[in-house]
Picture 1 (cartoon, rainbow, N blue to C red):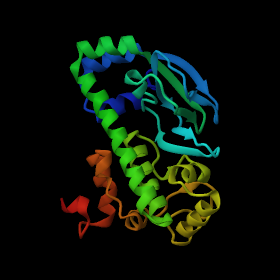
Picture 2: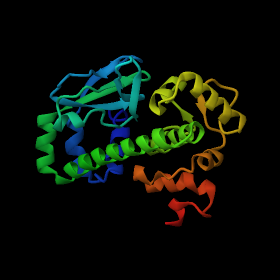
Picture 3: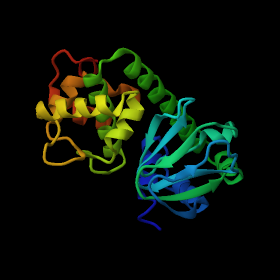
Picture 4: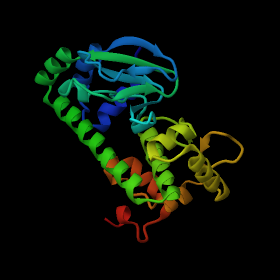
Length: 255
């Protein structure tokens, strides 16, 4: 299981937990749960488990079904992410976590997490930071849905996924999401989403030779999005991607 937990180690390091002693103490707390099929819930709405779930492999989303039966996706989850840490503090929730691909998951019991956090204060800081980053992504999603037209809205959403995938050590050029997934995260109809994806393909940003979301012109994508990735708090990854644009006039690089 050592190689399987590599994305989690990477994630914890990105959150500021870089002590080998702390990592060696935390990793044994993980209990392998198994594989989840695409489309199945990893965590069901209304459940109150006494553990948090870690996504070891695959892609997932945090979502809610609205009154009209539509799915609203709040955030996406990738290898190494804590799926439902919020339930450690707020056990009752009407949100769910669904697998968007074949996923491998593990769990860590809340009482074990609490005991480890008492022994290693940096773990508490890392978990608190993870919760703040989640809130930051929520805020950006509100701005994206409420203030941006469809083309920059989708471009921003794809930019975010690229940076997060790279931070997890995954291929950042191919987004492991469907158009329906992006539509449900961007509050667009599938027809509007398809039209927007076709526009990005015609602009040479996305590959035309595949039905998936494959980015072939990253600098153009960031330019269309006017992307400012500071809300992700991953400067080493954000700066790498933003270097495609040069330094003229961009708020992130001018700071």
